[in-house]
Length: 201
Image (cartoon, rainbow, N blue to C red; front, top):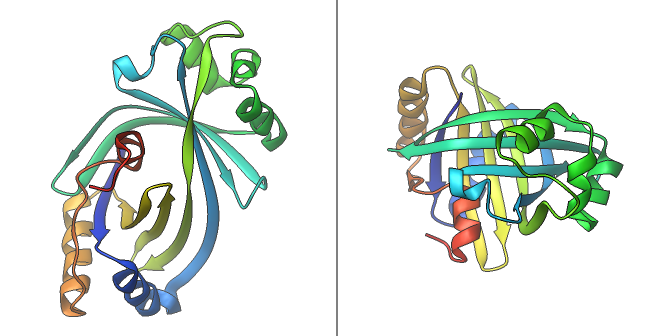
C-alpha cells in the first residue's frame, strides 16, 4: 500500500516560491513521461486499476506499475501499487505497439494478464499520457516531490510526500506553507483521473 500526502498549489508562482524555499534541500530533478494502458475490453479500468509505463529523462529508465483501489481523502492518497523496472527499449516498443505488452516478461505484467485477463496481441490499448517535471527534496526527514504536470489542457502543480505517518507529514507540510504565506488545497483527484477527465479540477 502506497500512502502519500498530496497538496495542490494554485499556480506557477506558488510552485516557484516552494522550490526556491526548498532549494538548499534539493536531491534530484526528473523529467518524466507517463503513459497509460488498459485492456481492449476495459478490463483494468472497470476494476479501478491503472497500468502505467513511466520513462525518466527520456529513456534513461522505465518503470512499469500497476495501481488499484485508489482512495484520496483530505489530501491523503492510499493505493495498492506494484512496480518494477523494465528495459527502456522494451517500454518504447510497447508505447509504439501496445499489443507487445502481452508478451513482455515481467512480474507486474504477468499479474495484469493473469488477474485481469488481458491477453493476446490485441489485448492491450494505449490511452495516452502526460509529462511531468519532478523535483525531489530531502527535508525535515521527509522526501518531498514537487511536481509540474503538463497536460494538453493545462498545467497542474502539486506536492507529494510518501509517508508511513501521513497525518504528521501533512501537518508539517501545511505548517511550512502557512508560515510562508503560500496558498494550497488538498488534491481531490489523482493525476490519472485528471488526465482522463480532460480538464483541471
